[in-house]
Picture 1 (cartoon, rainbow, N blue to C red):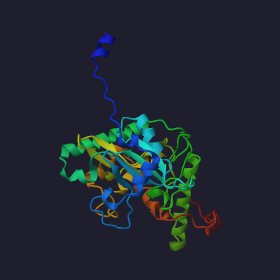
Picture 2: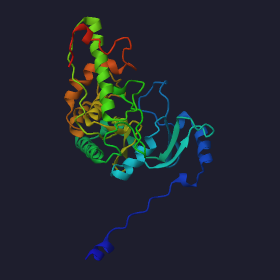
Picture 3: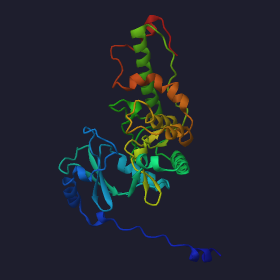
Picture 4: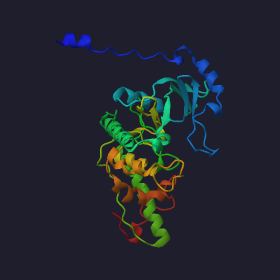
Length: 326
């Protein structure tokens, strides 16, 4: 019976060859040197000339992305091999400058996904299609949360050795933070931001606040950490792709939620702001972690805009004044 079903099963179609296969690294560098704004993918309605282009079409079926993330190419391949999430296949990784091995910028050559970014496709979708996208995104996130990570106690982006790298994003200051060697180190970093905030408030106003500490009770899970609608592509067949993994790594799930809803904030310019339905459904897609935003991260927002804590405020600042903060 087993052999009968095997013989009746539809054969898996072979993967079509890529135009990149016949090109050498030197050929690709030659194409990269010819890049111009006409071949760049830019966000719709994006008129800010200060925002640099990062993705270009170089052949009929391939794009090249410029990235400063040392882990992005690995994360794309890692997620592809551990989940069913549609992700562009990485074909080649090149250094920006072949003559400089210390260069910290890479070119990732990957398959081109022929479609429309979700942010642009969303307005013309029916409500049922939108709900399908939301449900599908939830399924992708659940897959990621179940995906094993090399070291369950080391947060942040990682490579094939499990080594952790610097964390990027709204809640790690504009300069980044880490790398953290343990979950406890990340918690301590956030707790320092809490101390900064409490000290700043007391110095300026004399008031004592009691903000919560970092919650490390949730296990680290695999998170894209940039679930903006521009990082999803709906292809010609209707399939939903997830395309940007520069910030991905191991994080608590509530931090993924917080980073996702940032894009729905009124402080985000209209061209980039996520629709209300998308932001409201983040609790369904990632998990209902609203209280981590309103009761914790929002209170520390000032400190996330600074690179380091107040060096002139000693760690015993409150103790010397006979004050206690929990």
